[in-house]
Length: 250
Image 1 (cartoon, rainbow, N blue to C red):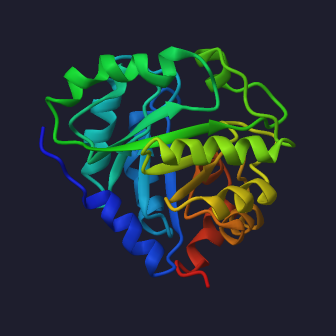
Image 2 (cartoon, rainbow, N blue to C red):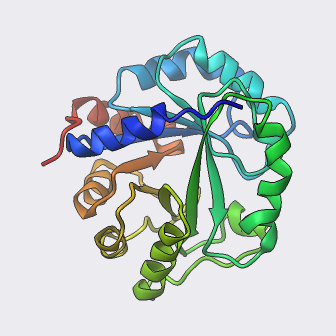
């Protein structure tokens, strides 16, 4: 395995230039391969800077096939957002090496990672260690069900802040605040800004962002990269608004 740092260095460069980044999340378990051409054409005309691919429950080999199809239509970096070892594929450009630091299930803190190493060693993926913090959003998410962990209480901001800082001190290169797919409530501006104040690493925020105001609020609060999923595909008006947004936010 070669150690690549192109994606991470580009993230840091964009942050220095005050460019706010947007990732479109594609869940292979919920996405039909027949949609790839039209969907990626839409992504290409938006302000999206990255494509994330992954989900909580995905059948083996599905991710690799989907990523290879996506790559035919875009030059955007494709980054794995894996829920399990079976989603690792050399077809992608990089991978978020997620540690669910909001939970206490050892499988998602280290065990899954150990199992992944032999597979990663046979790829050229740029692997980026990422602290993953699940925040309560008003409904149970697939992440909760699969990992058997509880989200962090959204009102206990200090504990969320301390958890994020602990992840950074452990050497993680990214921090990801996640409300979860289908979230009723997006991660609040208060949580984002409080976490951002203590971190020296890039901050990713995702889950429950369904309109431009929520997207802009996340950026203003301190998110360096925002992740949106089904809202991009389902809401044509949201997509049209995204096309008009600038990539630079003062």
